[in-house]
Image 1: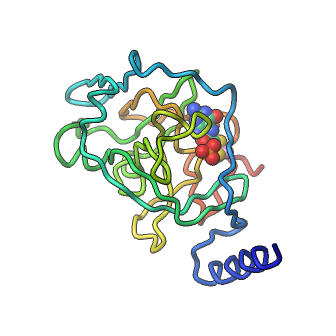
Image 2: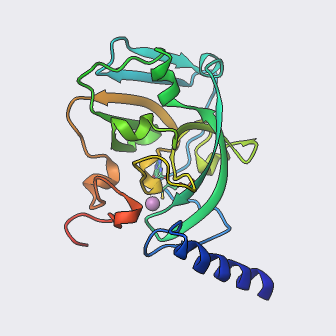
Image 3: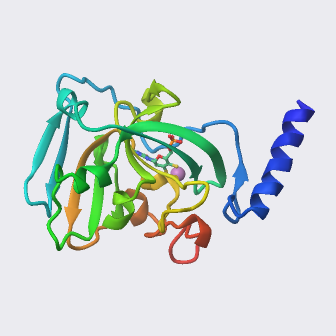
Length: 215
Ligand SMILES: Nc1nc2c(c(=O)[nH]1)N[C@H]1C(S)=C(S)[C@@H](COP(=O)(O)O)O[C@H]1N2
Ligand SMILES: [Mo]
């Protein structure tokens, strides 16, 4: 017990010095569950993921079709606006960046933003660059197992940070929509659920962009 506490504290200090823990964050080994509203009951037989908006061609994938897309694994540090961070989280799923590079998803040249649409109307918006980076994943698995219902089964957007911060953009965890059902490519930005309710539009953990209007 003391060992664990001491270990975590020591690691926290070390990581802060190594600039791996963003300002105002504390490390946790747990994986808290946070969302607004109930956990949906998903039927994979009728589930679809829709890609629409500023794209050359709209797509609707069934669960079976989605699972034939190229898959990838990433290990990311997660940062929640409620001030916990979790290091080295292993995810598996589909990289939107890879789908675009391979011409499977074709944004129109004027597309600059992406809105994730989730069950029950939850939305979150990001610049297109962020969701095309390797630290954003359409995630189906966490730690080798399918997502639990609470963490977004069967599919969630997931944004984190590589240990070496090799990608230019990162964001707090709310920019990953659980129970994802559609990706909307847009020419103009459109604030999502939390972004309309006082959260910061950009949400960069290193700039502590937690809330808008100086909350
Ligand atoms: N569909 C949906 N996705 C969501 C949310 C939500 O309310 N609904 N909350 C966001 C917030 S505020 C956070 S902090 C993360 C939490 O993810 P976790 O529960 O897997 O830790 O999910 C994000 N994705
Ligand atoms: Mo959150």
